[in-house]
Length: 356
Ligand code: 8ID
Ligand code: ZN
Image (cartoon, rainbow, N blue to C red; front, top):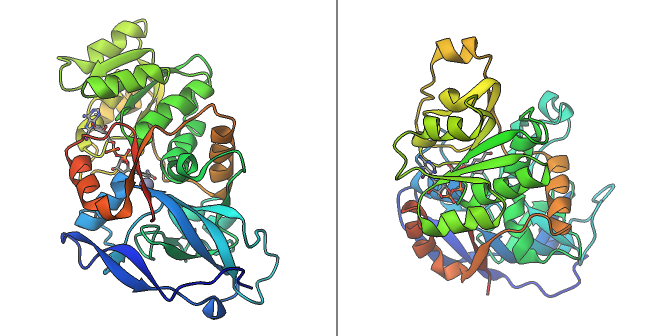
């Protein structure tokens, strides 16, 4: 079922074991004849680099990735082959599709039936428990890939598949209303800058928290109403109360890769507020007052990527032009320097890698 010639070898970015340097290496490409039913082979166009990829390369989370590891989980490519005997195939050869964190879910277990595909008992995670998008060719699954609308270019779509889906779902379940205040710690980063835009699209008022002039400018240009520089503010809780009639914000979507973004959230939320935990600092504990969590009727909600429906909704909103990933293009071979900049908090928005 292959329409183009497929090479036997490709370039990938691979980590031999966690904590080691990422290297560009040759790696075999699965032959179209060897694809199992339900599998498809993609020729990748590009991939975003998420802070999760850096956590994976460092192995700093309590759940460890497979090694050797080909990372990456927000990529776009073209289907060049589909496994023979695939039933009810929803996509076709030649179609552009996205690969997200959930590479595979069984669609049949309790969690899949309830729409929690990310918690599927048989889940495969792109760039974590199965090879990811830092590769020129990738095996994926026809029932799980996300079709990309024609009017959304691959480079703009890539980071919607992790960063976009994740913050879109967190906002969707934040139980806030149009006109409500949302605080976004990490607002100048990959997830955060998309959260600012989805929040504005949903009619929320945004208080952006991050550090430095470049991220300040980016957040304001995307529609944030208030900016707080966490490296300069003497009292973030007071700053937030001042602009919210002394009551605090209705919700917070915390997208920082460090635990410091979480520490004051219960204090700056108003009664009934929702804390959407999204950022995944290594080994940190949530340091929140139990008394005030109860006394203020605060909800703390762990929000983990999104399912196929969330992905379609997030992509379709991006295709209207209302949400745009702010990205710089680099090459796959430059990934090591991307990790270095990411660790230093130097990246405003996202880096997207081309595969050539
Ligand atoms: O499903 C999920 N929950 C999910 C999905 C995808 C990613 C969770 N994540 C996690 C990643 O693993 C990572 O831990 O979200 C976190 C953020 O990912 P990212 O947006 O890809 O990282 P980034 O681009 O480096 O942005 C982080 C921003 O946080 C700021 C930094 O300056 C940066 O702009 N920041 C930090 I670090 N500490 C801060 C603080 N105390 C802060 N901003 C405000 N206050
Ligand atoms: Zn991600």
